[in-house]
Image (cartoon, rainbow, N blue to C red; front, side, top):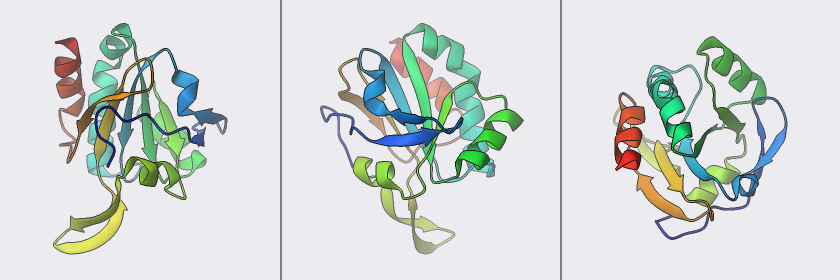
Length: 152
């Protein structure tokens, strides 16, 4: 998994409008990149809504927000519309970005070991350097945790 001080990988994926977006497109801007496993699951929905609730304040602090999951562009469009999300969602069907960040691997689900996305959030500065990593994120309240930490 990438650690503070590492550079954000230069990977291009399709966003929720089908447009290619590269993380280097955000040079000069602070960035929050959060990885989640699937659209419209209870935990992932709670996390997205938690972040959306504080999005205006995070944007005021200069942060762009990006959610990344293996879901399709069409799934992201529906998820974003259904929950009125105001930030970009990137489609990572081959888990290329998740692997580059080190958040795809073995995890425990319902007592079984499975391969999947580990719920993780990265915060990067204006130069694309990771400054903070949240591992094993608790979905509920994550947005408020980000806002509180990044405000101080």
